[in-house]
Image 1 (cartoon, rainbow, N blue to C red):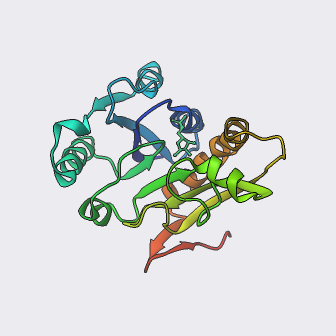
Image 2: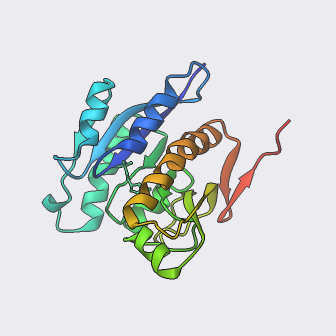
Image 3: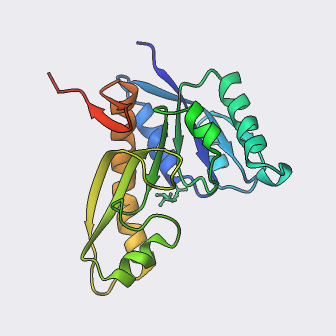
Length: 205
Ligand code: GRF
């Protein structure tokens, strides 16, 4: 079976990267992670990649004065590794429109809320401040507008009155680790595609 070659873009801890790596170990998983790119050399997730024997590349955004130049360096690394799909997992940079258009339909992200609620940063605090009783996480195709692409997978997580941003984040993270591999599996197997700005799901046989 030929597997879709995937790169994961990270900036920090790398727990979603780890969940994806575990999923890729299944013999019938349609994707393999061949490259991990970080914009920070101190990202803990780089060690996760090394431990799994995956190639890593640090591309520090501070070395580039223009967003497009930084994205061009990422694009070069993806092409050099013959990557066809990109999973962003805690990658804390916003891409240029050029990059997003170039990788359209092949660029996924995970966000720790039920989008379109609470895009951006301090997501769990936003959920607590809004008093929602349910939050969750979303895997979506990346589009130029931040945290707003067509949805591939979501999971709901109850918010408890005693939650802090930390306890809510921890509970949501468990679901992130479950749905990101599921979403990657769907996209890599061609069961969901981005078409005319929508996520189109193939009917299951
Ligand atoms: C996750 O909560 C993800 O949804 C958000 O950033 C966090 C990254 O965590 N975008 P990790 O690096 O995957 O552990």
